Length: 375
Image (spheres, rainbow, N blue to C red):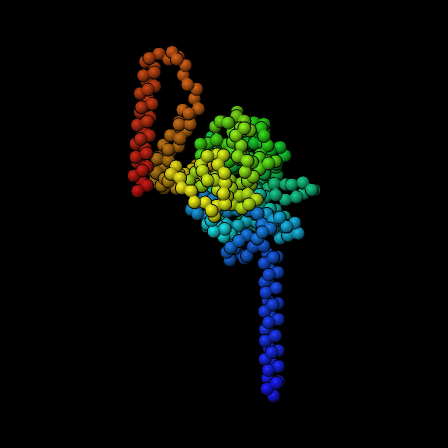
């Protein structure tokens, strides 16, 4: 009798052990199949076959970042069409699957940006007749969980942003890696270019000084133009940051953050040629900071200033108009050709000097009012 009881207990234990092993195998198999955890679960470490690609900070919420990824495991490519994630901490490496993140069943997200209304814009790539086709999608509203809407486009622009100087849409053409321009900020079909034939790039943005930066099409190195007028200047091929990157944006301390084959990295210093380190190891502190408007302006090309002015009131609308006039007038002053000596008589010079003083006084008053409104 005792023998039978012992045998039944051993058998029961054996059943439990076998069941436990089977459950472990099934869990492991599911993790390997999915690559990432579900939309309601944080992922502590990205799957080793996953590489983050394009990345961008949120246009409406601090410490929120969006990214797309691709898989290095070719056998799983079809499972990775839904390839968009978000995180609220880059250092945590905690990435979450988004709702309504998939463009369609055939298209991968290869670039992210915003439109003038702060809605996420995605460039998606699919393959047709063995050739890449690039389509443009925009979120229904600023809620990143809203649906994607496909817009008419010419299927050739692999990345897009806005010209920081004119506000026109610009983008990189997938055929030649050159910059093209659309004169209408909502027209993704008609593009003029190349504007300035130069070294081919896969993506462009601007630095904090308004100088255009490019990511090399062939080598993935970081290039920058020799001057602010990107239309008439060339990429500096002597001063290159030879870090291989997929995408870039500036952090609050003025250092660039990049997605790379080694993960998310950040520059140690604000200098263009500064080396990058794993963002989780970053401990540097800098005093010359950038605000959220400047960060998005460099990445998107648009200065989103609506949040700084209460445009529901007449005062807010007037201050916004004055601010925009100030911005345009400063750009005109910075770009004008210096007057030649003796080109104007003394009386005209005195008048110009007086007008400049009055304009500067007006700027001081505007800054003082804006400062009080922020308290």
